[in-house]
Image (cartoon, rainbow, N blue to C red):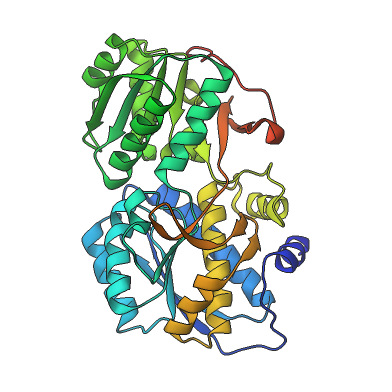
Length: 383
């Protein structure tokens, strides 16, 4: 297909001329459990990458492991892949909680791990040699949202509401630190228990703090419930800012009564000009019947890079690590290079964007040069 030809031409520094022996790569993902809706996006992206690698005569023998969103299962999955399955490398996981422990386990077994999307700051701040992250960090999520908000408006106060998971705590801390640097007064800052059936009492406290903007960090089920209950109690700030994850998911956007006007940080949209991105968006839409999310794009990129690195290293783990450490790739997710900077190790500097849900569809609104539509500012109110 046209997409494969364009993307493959622009996304690699490696050349292959003849079919090589299959490369065994492990995948750790939330295939079931509460995070499965976004886990599905990752799986779809990985499957498309495997198809396109095959067109380059790179045959990936994928070994899938379901972590169910639980760290202990993630540890067991990594141990199995490293020992019993003897994979050359691993793509995964989705959640920050699972990725944190999977990364530690990968380091212990000296198995290259390419993480697509988990954003907890500390994952790449441990000095690990075998852990590489394609995606941005929670600090990047906070910066792009607050830079946008302080450009479109003049907020003075901010409430922060995040789940009490690795991802949520890191995201809330990043928002507080960067918000204060931007001169915002933090009038509410609380972590909630993920998966609760009722957040109304907490949201009433948010409302009583009278914030100009509300910064939220949640996976998809809680993101939907929080917005439904915000509507019930009449919480209506100048803007709702969602730190990626649940707020950037198609399932959230479809909840048009509560998603309209909500901003979300993202790492990829069909508006970007990176090589093969628009073709990827069309292929994904045609195959899966929904718009590709940044989770799908970063997962595609992680598998795309690791598959080539493993082939160049002839399946050797240590040589694969060296290829990842020294390489640079032009991908559907932009230029990817794993670098050491600001306390990070093997961290890609990823371009961030902001989308807004408008009538059930994601519209790219930031940066301005990539806008696919005008932002609704301030919050247009509840439908």
